[in-house]
Amino acid sequence: MNRPREIHTGALCLALLAAAFCFWSAAGNDLGLCVTGGCALYQDATVAGVSLWWVGSGVFLLLGLLALLGAAGLGRALSALALLADTALLLLMALTAPCSNCLVVAVFFALLYRSFRKTALSRARTPQGGRSLLLAAWLVLFLVNLGAVGRSQAGVWAMTDNEDAAVRVFFSPSCPSCRDAVAALSGHVDVAFCPLAENDADVQTTARMLRLLDDGTSMIDALLKARAESPQATASLHPDMLLLRFRMLRNKAHVLSTGSQTVPFLEYRGLPSMLAQKNREREERRAAPPAQPPAPAPGQPPAQPPEHEDAHLPVEPLTAGQCGGANPCP
Image (cartoon, rainbow, N blue to C red; front, side, top):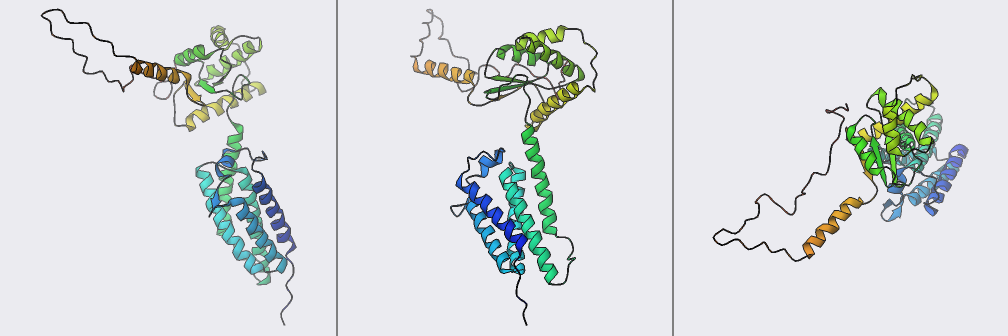
């Protein structure tokens, strides 16, 4: 005589909660709950034209139905397929950008699979069942994405509070080219200055710069005065100095993550104005009628243009100097 199947209460509650979360995310991607770059990257992802959030809602509702019917075996099979697909998504996010909302859904998939698996093994009278390789692979990729989320939230640190800066300048106080960059951009309200340390003296100089900036000194004056001041003994284990070192280390890690090992390192949000100005000047020169060369003197051959000139090549280098990597700051 077959025993009546019991409702799998735990899995049912998990599935309903997960389905509600997916429905909430599908109904409004602009809720602001997800703050990582992967959210914008994956929010419009679809399967056969259907949003992944609606697909997730359907899968969780189906798992909830199986839990209500007590079908632990079918629930284990379906949740395993869902967790396998989610593991592939975690791998994709690890190679691109993590989505914190997707990680919440991933936790639901893992908990449901574990719950169905435990119940199915218990009913089959094999409570041990061994380790799940699928759960182990999922856990490794989940931790990788979780670490990426934490790193993305740490972000970079700027000496001035300017979250909407169009330009970010990563510089070392001991780098001559960096000082030229700071001098050129000092005073611009849409520029954020992000110091990093090439040596221990850079940390001390930055600490002095912060004190000068608090007194209303401009960025370039603070940099020059901080370098000119006599170094003062500062406890390297002081909480403020430890925090400053950590912030500057984050900035350096950001520069290195881009593949660059030199400073100054500039990040633009949009087309740099100097390039737009050069393009306008180039278009004006092309639109203007060509200047006629002066007539050659009697008996002299006409002047020939230099063969090396090419209108499509830049007439001057786009960088004026850098230090770091193989060329350390002095």
